[in-house]
Image (cartoon, rainbow, N blue to C red; front, side, top):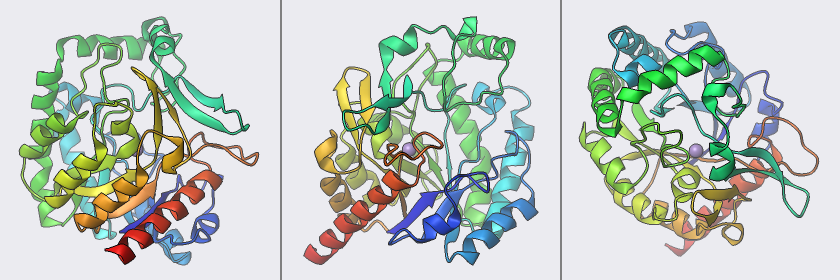
Length: 347
Ligand SMILES: [Mn+2]
């Protein structure tokens, strides 16, 4: 297991020096965040991230994310051009030593939460999700101001994009992801890059948009598109675990055994009710997931890929990017490392 930490580049209030001082840290997870979706990344920018991380004794072998253009998800004519750009980005990243690329196939919105700074009783703040609050907002009226997705959409742009998805159901979206995967796998295999799809977050349909990477059956079907280590998963315990029907430990055992997991986001989540959850501190005690069983499953299947703590709370007065502060994620990383040491020694 290689422990990593997401870094948003030089504008991130969390510095590489901060990250390098966290015990057990092997590397960073980053991306060229300033390049618009569908454009090629510059070699200089990729190499700069690599040089900066190396200067702090951190590897840069995981990219999160290389976003997939909406035209690919919609199956539009221009998708071939965007797939070509994606292939070029894979090659460039591989040349810089990147081994795993995390991405997702969620239409329009990336992850959704109803509140990014819900105040817990101890004064820390968490990201939470309440479906009734989300559904009270109408994205078409422009009253949606939610985090975690591309805020560069104009109101009209968002309306027309949502309209385009009217004709895309789960089956159609699956056809489009099949086309995408088949369009990039030869490059991934040639350059030994593992694609690792992130599950939909939350793992159910919101605003009637299709969702196809949300449970064990979906993940299995997705993996069957192309049976290769290059076509794998980012197993995000918090995303999948926010649906109480998902058994995250079983999924790690099943997909890990078959070498289908390239990257793990390990965090806890407290399921409050149907389509309601709070993100919590990492330890098992605080959420619905048994983090010991998760780490044990990783060990049992011989998982040798990359792990990172996922969203943390804001604690100790820290301000910054919600979910991506330094302190709580650092605690999460060390907790996960402690569990790992214990399971390794117990065998
Ligand atoms: Mn995640």
